[in-house]
Image (cartoon, rainbow, N blue to C red; front, side):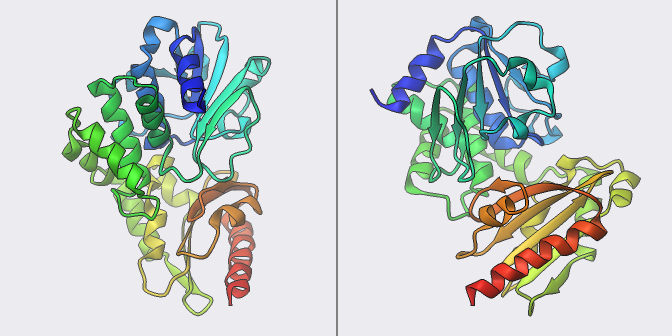
Length: 322
């Protein structure tokens, strides 16, 4: 039996499953979670969807998102735990998951840095998104998708492929997206919600990031930063900084782009690169992880301490390439 069918059989017959995903949830982890929930009729089987951080406002249009709860609201005792779009407890929980570590764990993910260890997993590093893996599993297991599942999974794929612009846009990703569109997905709504619905605070963050843009290493590294004070002044949240890191690669000749987001006691670092430079490796050296071209980490400290530490490692990677 293929792993797709193994996972599908488990999910379709699973009672009291806890589905969860990484901090600062994005369209892929939320879309793949909701897609599975709709496909397997999770509500009828006592499934609980849990995220530690709030769902970004632009993703609250996804059908069923109102059923995703925070850890403090868990009522039912789960019998199994499924990780989506990540594979490590530390990426999911700042402590709440400790109460469930004795349960069997499962995982569906596409991150190259995934180090999951559990009962069963679908780990496909060449997949564009976790949503693509979920859709492929449903196709292999001949599971019909309703419009709610199709909308959720299409959103996941569109988001992680940058609206089908990134190099992870494979023929399979496009074929699956086409199948989902045939279910009646509103592609215009998905595009607008994902790429054209920045909040007022998000627009200020974008302005500040452009203002603070700097270049080094003979213009091969572009970096920018948003201070804790700047974000606090407009009550910006982590979701208001979504996708800003991508702008660090706009200038011709830039090989590595870095965005520093300062919080009260730590700095979130988003890493982007052109072909040939492994951001997952750079992130791992800083305690994080992610994809080959897009990765990140969270480092304790302030901008003054973290920024030079990261830039030194980025410069070393540039020099190694020469």
